[in-house]
Image 1: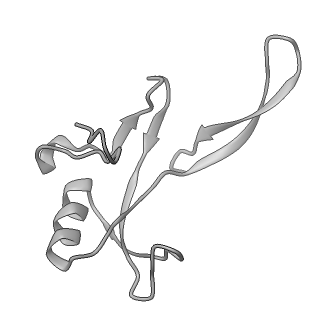
Image 2 (image 1 turned 45 degrees about the horizontal axis):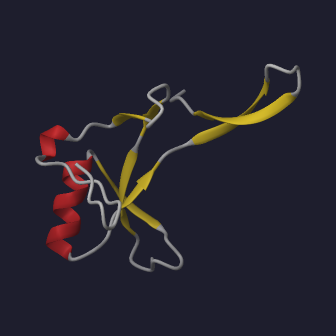
Image 3 (image 1 turned 45 degrees about the vertical axis):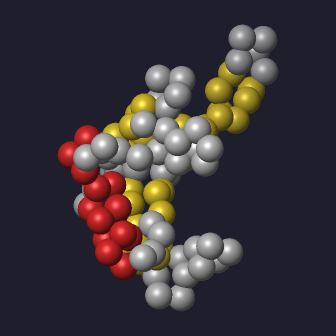
Length: 97
C-alpha cells in the first residue's frame, strides 16, 4: 500500500513484504536488501550498518530504536542495441553469484 503524500510504501504485515519485488513496469526482478544505519550514519551521509533478514525485520528494529532503515537494490550497466541499431546503456538487476 502506498502513502499518496509521501510516496512511502508500507506493508500491512511483516509477512506480506518479500525480498523480491517487481518494478512498476512488471519486467524486472529486484533482490532488495534491508539495512539499519551504522552508528555514524546520517540522512546526508548514509552508511550501512547491520543487515536485516527482511523488510518486516528492518521495520521492527527501526521502530524500536527510533532509527531509519535503508533499502538497497544492486544494478549493473549493460549495453543493448535499440530498435534503430544504436547502442544504449541500460540498468539490469544484478544477480547473486
